[in-house]
Length: 69
Image 1 (cartoon, rainbow, N blue to C red):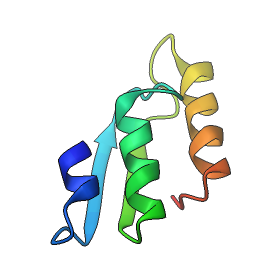
Image 2: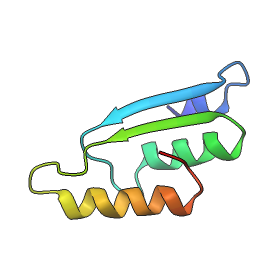
Image 3: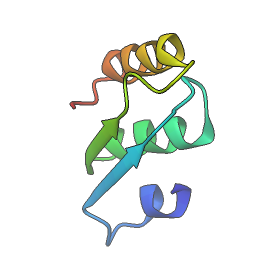
Image 4: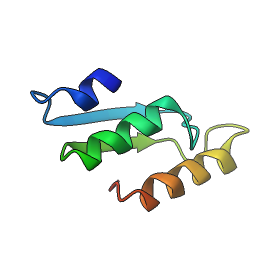
């Protein structure tokens, strides 16, 4: 994910995630990619069993970083 975020030939990144921590390496790479002009699409399971609150927090974190869902 980090390499794709830095690669000038990559124009967009799409990812589907069951869980996504707010301060994970994947989250950071997606934020970096978006800040570098790449189109970033994240499909996140908001009701992942036993982890709904964490995913809602992850979504808020990404929204605050100006990523669009």
